[in-house]
Image 1 (cartoon, rainbow, N blue to C red):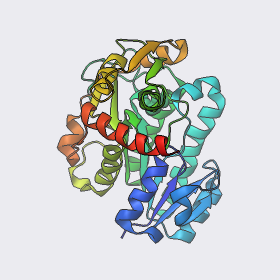
Image 2 (image 1 turned 90 degrees about the vertical axis):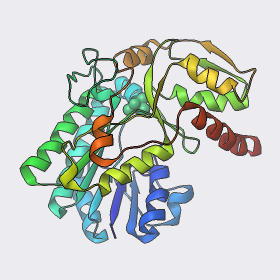
Image 3 (image 1 turned 60 degrees about the vertical axis):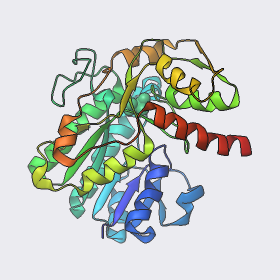
Length: 316
Ligand code: AKB
């Protein structure tokens, strides 16, 4: 049975990943860590405070827990990163280096969450290949591209079992994201339920890759369980389940809430970030090397999101 330490456990992915991992590997085998004290499900099992830049503490926690796997989710998202690039670099690069070193010391497998942000405006935009020009232009994306390469370096140089995914925008009804460019595709569902309308900060016609959280959680476990002899790539695999613009997600919502209205008040920062990212990724390497197969398309996700959010928001 794996013994897993998760960083950033209180974040958008971490807060769902920890209960998911505990349901597979057992509650006592998953140590959640975060800079903030735990809330909700996280408080149910093992938890420790950890600032990911503190490599010594990370190493102590890994050693004491006898972890064999580190899933490093802590990080600052794209739009927030542009507001304070030095801080974003510190957390996203120095924090990852500290966690990689701690993993190396204890010979842990290491998961790194990269992003569509690791690509840039000179990347082929449509059906973006697995291996291609990257040249990102946000501090978040530069950190992601650099850490993809550093994780590969730790594998080649130190034979550390590093693996990673390039996440698209992730949509979930549990913990809202904070400071990302793809966040509009989550907010739109909340406002559809509470107001019947949404004002998008991303312009009509702007396509980005997206995926529903249950598919993202499954992809992490599938990749970490994959037979290493089948992996030609490691850091990081393109994954996506859908690509849409604000009009298409609004159309999907209208199939459930016919009067839903979409308006625009475009945010120049987040729009320029979105325009520097691909429209749609080629995920064939993930499919071929470890069987990536997401279950949710846009309409299926919309029905599930709206049903779950309604239960939560209308009760509240
Ligand atoms: C963001 O928008 O910053 C993230 C991402 C695509 O990495 N959701």
